[in-house]
Length: 149
Ligand code: FES
Image (cartoon, rainbow, N blue to C red; front, side, top):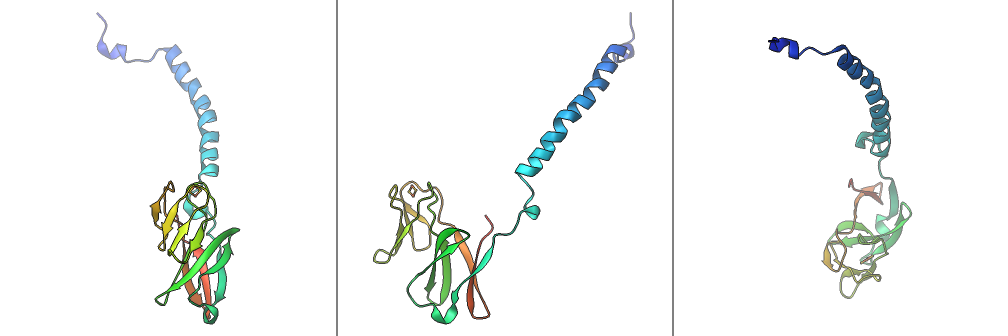
């Protein structure tokens, strides 16, 4: 009868098979790791969203101000002394929402999505609220920047 500790010994063939597979595993995993780092870089390596000057504070009235942020339409409001800005790109399929001043809501012409004045979805297929832009004053100028997503 064989000793049970003998059963645990690796045969020469098993040892060679295992050690030979290590470089093969590294050859597969290393590019996958590098590719993963390229496709999904850590947030610390991602460029910050651009910040931009929208309008001088003295020129900001009660009417909303349309502007283009990072190539996409956006809108700035002044409500009760507070500035608030939204991207006008619909979160459903990317159509440009229109501001309905009478109804105080954003309306998407494509599939009937409706967002309230805070950018929250009220009706229709959009899955998420409109993107909000952070706003602040810098030397009398209203600045805007996309908040971290
Ligand atoms: S793209 Fe706006 S509701 Fe579909």
